[in-house]
Length: 375
Image 1 (tube, rainbow, N blue to C red):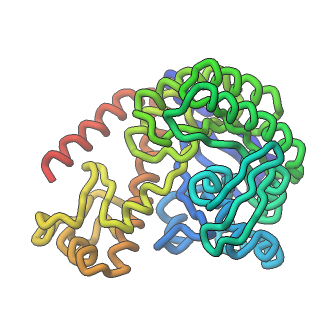
Image 2: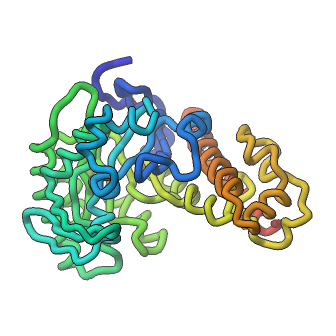
């Protein structure tokens, strides 16, 4: 395996790309969905089961890990890969979004953001430099710049203020990034719902020598058509030779539509959170196991799935576990969901390689609609 970080496009179908990101810790096949291991764990799953489901890379989060157990402690214990027993690639989110959404009494200025922990009220300051330092201590393979993410809808003036601050923080993050063999740092496009701001942000980041570029500030309350419009606006201004990452987007239909518009990387808590609350994602659409209709249903979630949780347990049993509040139900449904997302990404990669992405998306969406109407 190469000691350098690199990205290769192996096939295209329209704007969609099928490719590989090479890192010292392994190849990341794209388009890729990254299960979220926010606090050094993909909730309700063993790391080896996440790998067996087909995941090439996980996501960790600066905000949560800096608060507990602490980046310096993880570094002393050998780094995040060793700490959580995941020897494959890890991407770390800079923590900016979580500061804005979770922290108490936050104060934002040019230097960064000062906030109180949602855990114990302790005060912390997160600057672009500190975020990069934490990510270096964690030892993540792909590191993200610190940015400010505003919720939509917002005024264009507010979106512009946050975008320009994020660009200044991008320059500082890129400068603070410690160059190490095989590690990468990504910039983040912001700009709210403004095409003008999105284009300006994308062009500026393209000139900063980042290893990849993410599109941030979407999936924060806007309709799907707005998200897709922003992607169509932004993607032509991103370097074709670098990975494109749509942050925090995880609804299956959003993923397939974004892949068709040239996006390579995704992450979201949706599949794991849904599993803990009795909702399964399958080839046949969503299945709500809390519903009484499943109490006597001997069928599995998906008899064709390679995942034992989806293939070998009856819906009746899963319904019972969910209703009884059994931890096993959360574990099985989380495993089934993570496996389905990986199967979906594998299908997208194969379809792009075969030049039949439009047909694959149409067939997949038809199965979701048919399955949900029948369940």
